[in-house]
Image (tube, rainbow, N blue to C red; front, side, top):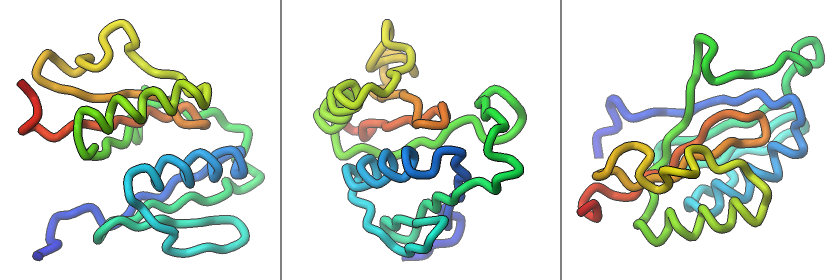
Length: 137
């Protein structure tokens, strides 16, 4: 498989490293990622050719609040296995107290033909999980 153009990795800084680590460890595990690298102030998880890195924010910046509407990264979007997978993740996230975004339009907040989950991670970054297109009616 030619990997040209595929995302290599994403690196996220966390102000509350332990909370973010606990969340991302669980969430990425649900999507089939496995721990790739591990060190005192960071961890990465890999799925195929792509990996996600979580790093403790430098103390100098740890109190600066992230907002997805500021210039920079708005959200991360992941593929789900199926609509059922989207539904299962939605329930598990609710059980974990995560904020489900666009609740009144869920799971069609992206449009009638788009089946997805939108939620916030511990840093309030938007994360999206999308069902395969072939499943969309």
